[in-house]
Length: 221
Ligand code: SF4
Ligand code: SF4
Figure 1 (cartoon, rainbow, N blue to C red):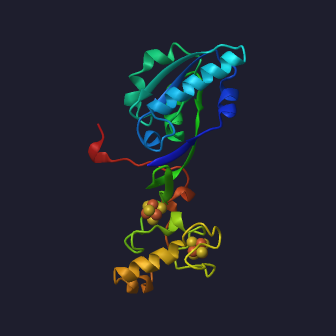
Figure 2 (cartoon, helix red, strand yellow):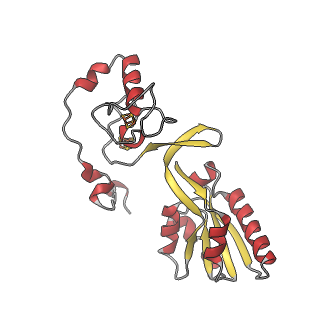
Figure 3 (cartoon, rainbow, N blue to C red):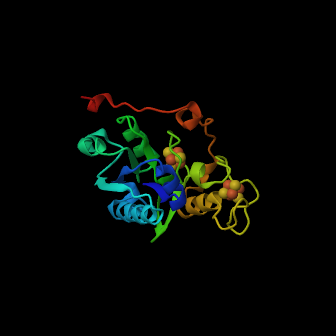
């Protein structure tokens, strides 16, 4: 999932300051799972905004709605009549959702969240980065542990030498990704795979090649 967290309320209040009628638009997919921008969080944020503006003596009319996914026009366009009623939309989606809606509207679409990374649930309330979307997955070579997103130096050819007691030298609270890879490959009895010479990774498929687009001709309408 895409993991995000709410911006500080002061920052949100500043961004909506010029507006007297806004829509707080939640997103019920990734950001709902990480408890940052789903229906419940969007509702709490809307209440906080109303209270803060009331306290400041500058009332604001806050409409609320949550859609299934803000990264799909199909769900966004279904709420078209709501956008006509407000001066701005405060989106609790990730940065993708904010941009998707912004491209459809002639009014400001403001982010309520800071989008962090693609990750998985570690335990309740903790999420860990797991993928950087490099576009050429190497997990079959690394025992299902991603060196691109989990090694602080994105090393592909083994540990840097700074690893100590299984922890990363960049952040001792983090496991060394290469220690994890070697332990996992040892357990899988596939350690010899790491000795195979691999061609240089083509980073053009990653973000380094500029913004990416994917088209599936077989599903296009
Ligand atoms: S190798 Fe690339 S695609 Fe695979 S998990 Fe890592 S960043 Fe994601
Ligand atoms: S200690 Fe391990 S995870 Fe940290 S930068 Fe070096 S190889 Fe990567």
